[in-house]
Image: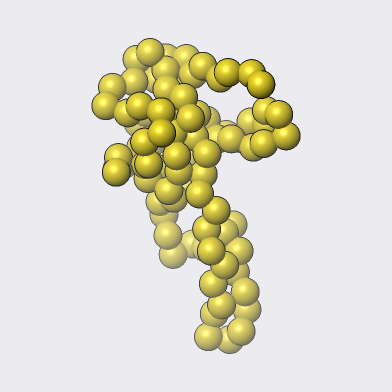
Length: 89
């Protein structure tokens, strides 16, 4: 298995899958259709050398519209900037 290293102020995260919700009208909304929640939870996989206060295995909340996806070993991760993290649990 390859080890990932983030560069600079980038953070590699593993987003937590959001639960589907059912609307009053009976529609089932998946995680992409949920506009009521701006922030998503994730687990930190790797952090760049210029990131402070965040370490691998931290649980965080980040802006859902930030970053980009990357696939490694048939698993999808997301790469975001330190600036996009709003809470470290």
